[in-house]
Image 1 (tube, one colour):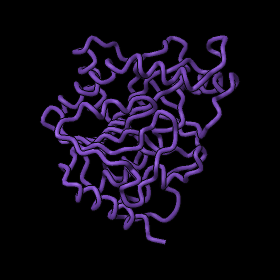
Image 2 (tube, one colour):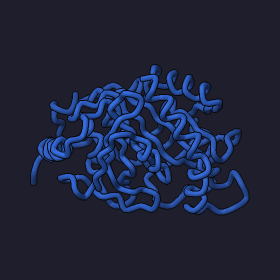
Image 3 (spheres, rainbow, N blue to C red):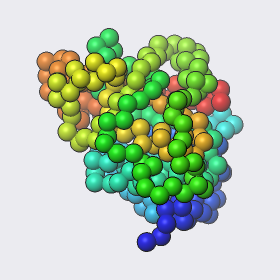
Image 4 (cartoon, rainbow, N blue to C red):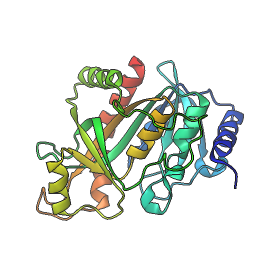
Length: 273
C-alpha cells in the first residue's frame, strides 16, 4: 500500500495540474453549506473522485467537489463536502483533504459544520465561533506511526482554534450586522443523533454544540502548523432541548435559511485575512 505522505503528494500534484491558483486559504463546507463555493471568481471545480486518492463524499448535503478560485484578492480553496467516520472511514481518510491542503501550502483553514445546539440559550440558525473542542469520537487521526514531514509526534493543542482568526470572525460578523455566538464543540462519531441523556452529559462537561465532524480535521491542521478557525451553524436544537424528534431535513432547511448570512460572514473573514 502506498504510504500516506506519497498519497497526499499525488493528490496535491493532481490539483496543481488542474492549472488552478495555489490556495492561501481553505474552507471546508459542512452539511448544506456548499453553495459558498460558487462565490469564488476565476474558479476551477473538480469532483473529489477525479483527484488521486481523495475520498468521495456520500452524505446528503455534501456535494463532493473541490473549487479553487479567488475572493477579495485571495486565492481560496473551497471543499464542498467532507467524509465522516460514521461512513466507515478511518480518520486518516477523513482528514486526507486537510493533509493535501497543508502540502499545497495553505496557511489558514476555516472549518464549518452544521451542529446541534446543546446550549439552551442558542437558537436554530445561530452561527457559533468554535473556541475549543471536546473529542468524543473515540479515536485520534494522529494514532499510528508519525511522519515528521507532516508534523511532530506530540503536537500542542493548547490553542487549536486561533485567537487571531476568532477576532477576525467577530469583526466580520459585526460588519455584517451578525451577532455571533462563541462556544465549545463536542464531536461524536454518529451517525445516530445523541440521546437526551447524552446531551445533558455534554452540557454538564461544557459543550455548547455537538456534531460528527471538524475535530479530526482541526487536529490534523494543527499537526501541520495550519492556523484554524471553526464555525458551526446551529441547525437544530439537540435531543431533549425541544419536545420533538430530530431529522436531517431540519439541518438542510436551516442551512438554506442562513445561507446569505453565512456567505457574508465567510467573505468578510477572507477579506480581513
